[in-house]
Image 1: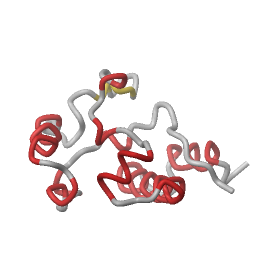
Image 2: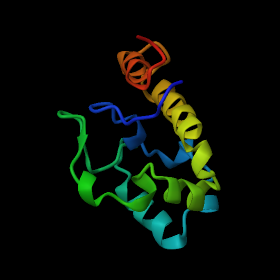
Image 3: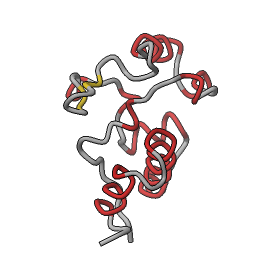
Image 4: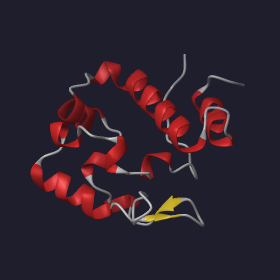
Length: 118
């Protein structure tokens, strides 16, 4: 069974373009929405995403909505803890496909890391 995990040097989730997420106000509080929008650069990428290293420059202090944790996903998206693994995998696959493509190296690496491909 595939097991979700964050794949280092991917960064697909750091593409924050609000036009890709028209329902942000449905799950973020007013303060969280303001923070989210303040993090979006002109190119749609998070201002804290380093394109050269493909890493988050504030990872240890990243906002709550950037964390894949059972309590966060239950609060924001009403996802039960036992559903988190499958939900997170689906989210990553959709985001990686949208940002890099469904046959990208990032998608292949993600699928290998979570146990879809060996």
